[in-house]
Length: 102
Image (cartoon, rainbow, N blue to C red; front, side, top):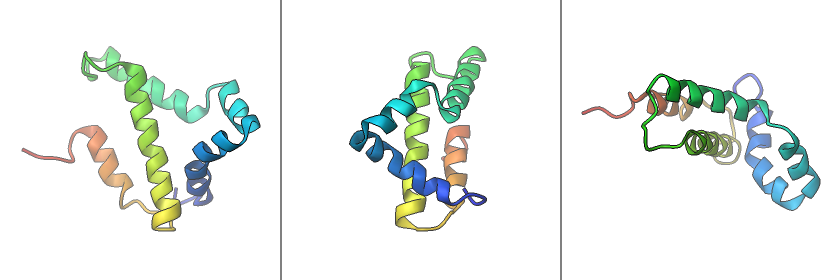
């Protein structure tokens, strides 16, 4: 995000552009994108090691993480209008289970 700030704008607009342009949607659906593959693999590793709650599907967990990253991209591109780790670091802690304390 900091090295390639243009990616946040692209990622934040992608879902809308997929709705507007069938050829973009078809291109994105033709084969799994690297981000989705990476997230799905990480979630499957979590499932295999017992770190994913038994009542949560791996597919739904991966979709949730991807949806959050799209939201972070939108936030960076449209709201704060600059690449920022301010929201990414807490998100990483949320995933690690260290954002909220008892």
